[in-house]
View 1: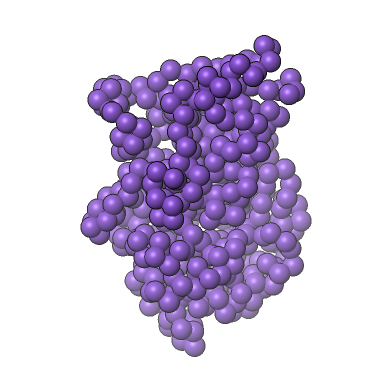
View 2: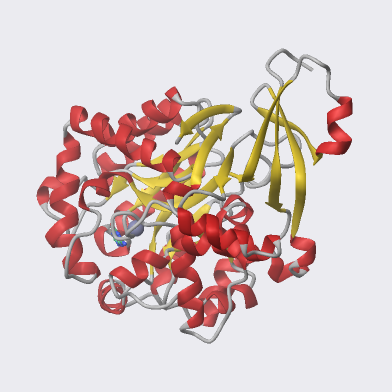
Length: 434
Ligand code: GUN
Ligand code: ZN
């Protein structure tokens, strides 16, 4: 045990499997009086305080929290860093929203100084909300990705990001070319992929804004480097889907466009997937591709209701995304509150343990990172959060009425937001404290 060893004592909860696969009771571990032992940025032990405390050397510092719950850090599987300044833009659905608000906002990221400033605000906001890993869209400018990764590296965060590739159907000031999209992405991959805890995602914005040539080169990049991610949008909005049919009449459907260009796979994440047919779910599952479920965005842009039971039926990997700036909150607790309502509107339920799974281990599995993050199993990165039962007077009072961890967890998700996150730890270091 090294000098960097530290112990955290509190109620501790984490997911260990998908409740849809193993049932709720087998999906989690809960220690009412637990101890989490951290050594050199990794989790070295997890268990009951009564069992672990006697085994600790006397010089190990133990931080004891009352009225708090430790869980793994949250994982946001879809978010746009350059849209931080336009969150909450009024009145439009997807395609008009992009033209009216998004493209002008992203234009500013040609300026590295602007990108640097927003990268700090953005990452601080992630950490304030307990998000320790995110799959992040940059803008078309490589500067945006440099700014984001520089700040993530400084804090030793596990993050995934990429430069947008977009060579048609967008303003001239925001397009690359098939060739420059490829060479700029390649330079960023060589600079950042695998550095510290950083990973690169090849990021074609969505099928309508890339030519077949650009999508071909995106597929080629994935073949050239090991373990790259692929991150794009899929079947979010009905007009968008019609547009894809017009642009690619020779393809069976929207997902088939990406499939044709070899963009599906274990490290591919498709945001939204609100309007998928069974055949598309089948294809996502058999290729190990994941969908990012983005509740606040789907409601805000009026895109539709994600069919989680359909994804479960076909065993499609699903993570949770905020999709800021179409999403209206950086908080995955708040996002789960909206996810619950989306299920209610479809006559389905979202249990608090499935919710916890989506925000943590499910996200890690969607990103093929479950051997490193998403649960508190020994050996994993020490990325975790301390949630405060007394964050607000109402939460304090409501949790006093709670009789079980299920109920407490559901209240945290229904009333919770950034105020609930007392501390955020990344690689064993405290990176946010309220
Ligand atoms: N589809 C293409 N680009 C975007 C974007 O920036 N946000 C969302 N929500 N959908 C998109
Ligand atoms: Zn998005």
